[in-house]
Length: 125
Ligand code: HEM
Image 1: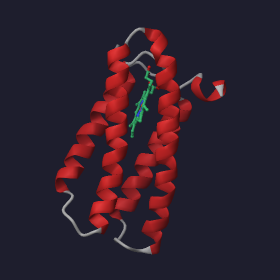
Image 2: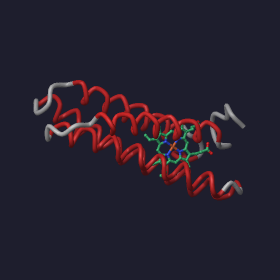
Image 3: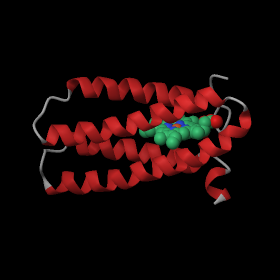
Image 4: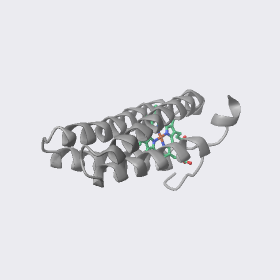
């Protein structure tokens, strides 16, 4: 599976599509067939985000930045969890304002750490 973890392209593709599908599902009317389908496809991408993230994580263990990789893993996982929680809770008619804020904070931290860590794009070395 080297071709998937040699570059960060697979991970970038997975989270960009996953986050976009999540946002599309979130603005669609609750309970509609279109929203359900979009949510299902988004979930497939959550799995791809996790898989590609874990593959990079294993590889990242060779770079001697252990702690930062651990934090990236946690925040990445948290971001995916919050996306799922926003959709599930808003479908139940519960308030999701706090979850939205937490999602954007988690997304920002995850992207910052991703672009800081040494693989792929390295904006904040
Ligand atoms: C929606 C959730 C996620 C977002 C927005 C995200 C974002 C990013 C970004 C922007 C990068 C940098 C890519 C590059 O430099 O080319 C990256 C790399 C990485 N991500 Fe994620 N990620 C997410 C989820 C995860 C998860 C769940 C994991 C772990 C299971 C993970 C582990 C990693 C690792 C290990 C790297 C490589 C870091 C490096 O050395 O550059 N990510 N991610």
